[in-house]
Length: 253
Image (cartoon, rainbow, N blue to C red; front, side, top):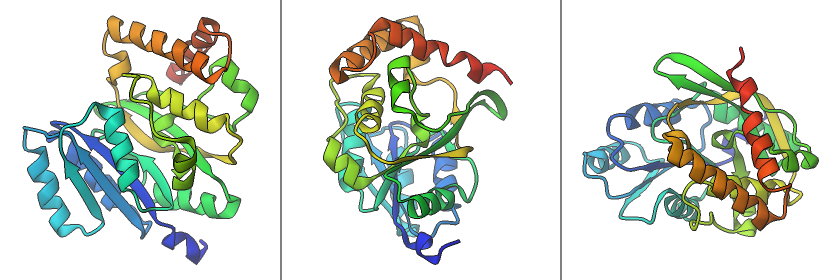
């Protein structure tokens, strides 16, 4: 491995709110990475279950941890705070109940940023229920034409140069569920150099906000439609339908 890769600073942002039951695994997966220059930023939404105390204690013994705990206007506001705090050349996200798949996941990402001079790097995602894998999101190399057919990368695996976020702007926190889709469209339609790594980067627990019940799924559909119109991509609800149909193969193993 290129010696320089070990010194590419990568910031990983984790958003927490009453996450005491799951946070320890996420913390351990970041601290267990072989990549030397990893900054872990924790943005807590004024938790009341002991999460804040857990983070404070952890930060005292891990100098690469930076954190803040205060009320926010939702997850996307918190993500914007995290990006503003980041000092790494590259920024990625890890949910408080998810883990990086392997100890060398970040090392592989750094190597690709260096060798390919990429602006964006992403990989595959697996969904778990406990210790059982229930869904596997295998991605592919990016083709700009695919956006109008509902393609998007597994966003928890997407790592982006901080300069790109400075250029495309913050998450649009008008959206309650689909600001991540909006951000992916803004980045991937802007002509940045992307690189796909054909390996699992993140192991994610099932049960996200967009899938927890029928009302949430309907809200997600409506917001996705607005995102597409905002970005002038695709054919409205037809593209949304294509996006949903793409998920079917993720359940086939």
